[in-house]
Amino acid sequence: MKKRIFSGIRPTGSIHIGNYLGALKNWTELQNKYDSIFCIVDLHALTTPTTAKNLQEKIFDLAAVYLSVGLDPKKCLFFVQSHVPAHAELTWLLNTIAKIPELERMIQFKEKSKERRSNVNAGLLDYPVLMAADILLYQTDAVPVGEDQKQHVEIARTLAKRFNKNYGRTFNVPQVIIKKESARIMALDNPEKKMSKSASSPYNYIALTDSSDAIREKIKRAVTDSGTEIKYSPARPAIANLMNIYHCFSGLTFEKIEQKYQGKGYADFKSDLAELIIAELKPIRRKIKELKNNPAQIKKILDQGAKDARIIAQKTLQEVKKKMGLI
Ligand code: TYM
Image (cartoon, rainbow, N blue to C red):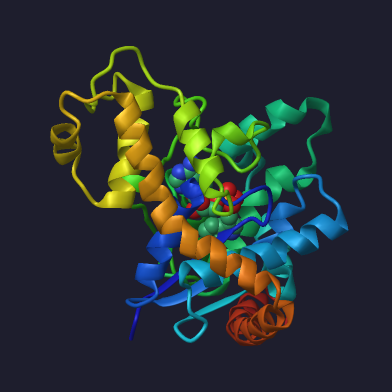
């Protein structure tokens, strides 16, 4: 039997090349090897303030992105988290074994609660428990994510083990899958920070829907280090990040890239990098646009996905309830 993977993306902000390289592009390969489930995690998105209209739009946009990068509903299952009520229900049950200090230790919680200070909602603290419920409901074997989500997968593992110990074996304990080179794509305007959907400046990221001109402009304005050489060194984080992006889009090793740009400067390198990104994103962008004109097709796929997901999720939830003495 094939092993199962589960992963998800929050429908917030602009889906960027960090999400694409760190998650989506891997998923399109993994769907051929694994029994694959991909979720649009709208309940997680609610922890970021938004409006009903905007969230609905973002959910459909993200579904269009999933389809446009090559996720195939015939090969994998994808659905919207809130369409499967078991996610919220299992979250409550897992809350009773999750410990506040272990949730407070999460890097993402610390960062986000710093941003919002007095206004931190309880959903932000509970975010990893909902993510654990997502993963554990499907008896997942492995979770393909970017580096920033590793700690959250760890919590899912901890909760699975704790539940199994307290109540008897119920959950699979999932592994994490992280693709080394695309695990952490840094911001174009600050190579010390990761590229982020919620960045206030659009020069932080390249969105999958950016026009070719916008991509050229953003790469041109991307921060570089002092010096002129195209040489990979962790001590020069800006050029290291751009070379890493170059590598992810071209498949060329750092050595080959260095050879190619020997005696040339940042301008040549950046101009080629922009064209590489454009060549890969252009067909995706076109497809997203096409699909957005056909919301009925997207709705049909999401409805079927939710139906199939409910069956798997319900089976685990029933077992959990039995073990806990609820039925
Ligand atoms: P989210 O929506 O922030 O990010 C979606 C995916 O993109 C990866 N990613 C990156 N990879 C490389 N470089 C970057 N700069 C970069 N930024 C984001 C993330 O690691 C992630 O894989 N909590 C999750 C969503 C989630 C989930 C789940 C994931 C909810 N339930 C269950 C896996 C399994 C999140 O907010 O991802």
